[in-house]
Length: 251
Image 1: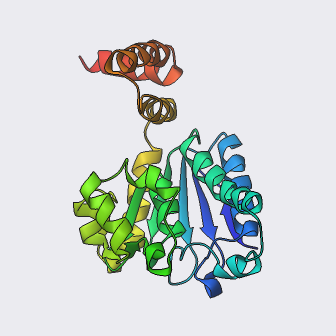
Image 2: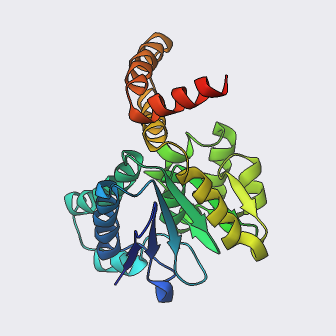
C-alpha cells in the first residue's frame, strides 16, 4: 500500500509509504493520498491530519521513472499528469481540517511542495528542504504559488533558482516551516504539538483556515467584509457558545 492511514482518535495519521523510493510521488500514491484526505475530511472525530513519510525521508518529489515512461507523450498528456498533482495541492488547501506535515530527512521538489502545501510544517533539525528541479532543466512550477505565499519574494527566488537544499533551522528562519525540533525529541514534540492543536475548538480552527485562505488576493474592503460574515457565523457555533459561557462564568 502506497498510503497508510489511521484515525482512531482526533488525529488522523497519513503516512507516505514508498520508503524504498524515498516516498516519491507517482500516480498511485497521489490518487491514494487524495482519497485518504477525503476520508479524513468525513471522519467526524478527526480534528487534525498529520502527514508523515515512512523510512528516512519525507518525500523526494516526483518519481522520475514516470517521466521516462512519458518521454514521448504530448502536451495534453503532460498537462493531465500535472493536473493530478495540482489537484492534490488544492485538496490540501481546501481541506476542512488543519493538515500538519512532520518532516524527517529530505523534502525535495514536489515533496517539498507537498509539505509546503500543508497548513503547518514541523521538522527535525536534520531535515532538508529544497527545489532542485532547475538543476535538471525543469522548473518547480505549481509549487511556486504555494512557496510565494510562505516566504519573501527574494527567498523564494533563491530557493527556486539555486536548487540547493536548506536545513530545517534556516527553513524556519525564513518562514518556510513553523518549527524545527531536535532530532532526539522530534516525535514527542510533534505529538505534543498536534495534540494541543486537536484540543482547540474544531469549528473555530476550521473557520479560521477557511477564512485565512479565502481572503488571499482580496482587496482590504472585501477581506474585512468576508471577516464580518465569518465572525457572525462563528458566533452561532456550539463551540463559541460553550466558550463564551465558560468565559462569562470566570468573570
